[in-house]
Length: 419
Image (cartoon, rainbow, N blue to C red; front, side, top):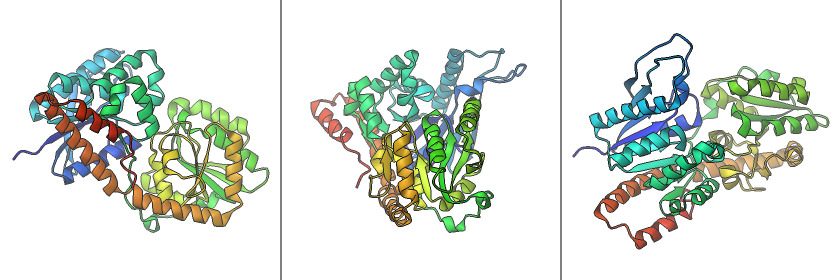
């Protein structure tokens, strides 16, 4: 019997750095373990922007990585400026060629913008079930571009199943496309156990002093680092603190962040590692006293789960999965996003309460081990794939009715990763 063939489309995939790529890799391995044949098609519109003088044909390069067929798709470069519609038209054709070659049974797009539209269009034209996974920015940021709204609504309406990493995202999607309530589920990312004792001592540890407050990731607008800078400057008037940013600012915002750092006058209290390997980034976590994640919106950030795995005392904001995972006063503290005063007060409280930090860290480790284990996410994804494949077959047979809608509504209203 032939294996069911899944084609996942994504903007990034290892060795690319990013949370979406890590999630796709993790899910691909889960699917392989469950007997599926998995293909991952990787493309993004930034690839159409190249230096003057470079010309190339459209291409699709396929490699086999850990049992996953990985297809890197590039559009043609025929002139100094490649229009967006030309890029997506060629990406669509390359995906179509892949489907003609492999005859996929199901498509799955990560991120509504870019991947979601071309994948859903191809799937619907070929009567293949399509899952779309909302990650965060697609509904928190891109939805505010007037040209994106109708496209996003169309993708949501035409998906066979939609997944979300937080209930806030599901709620917003349901407002944009009410039918999403009948064909969706919200559950968190997972994380495999990490042995921090086996990681080497990172290079900048000797430069850290006092209470070390840290955050980890690719820092950009949504991460709320402005408020963390302000809070640490204020706290530094009372206590010896170091703010450690493990990672770096994204290139297009670099000048803004350099300005913010200079204006904050945080000076020697700030330490930025720059881009590091994931192993080195993880190695910094045990050296933090407090892990801060002051995001204004953030889906379900992997860095939060990593900090929980390292038994860190966490202070986060009441947004998305951060507020769903962290229980205020039990395994961390929550403050309102964009509120420097609350963030400062929360950091001050944790900085002066070492026993509480230890208590929160232990509780966070227990939660991430029990409720955010790969086995939990594995079962959630298997359920999603079975529902999407079954829903598609039911639609073809004409048996989707009111009773099916009722079942879907029940699934959408609960966070199925919670135990």
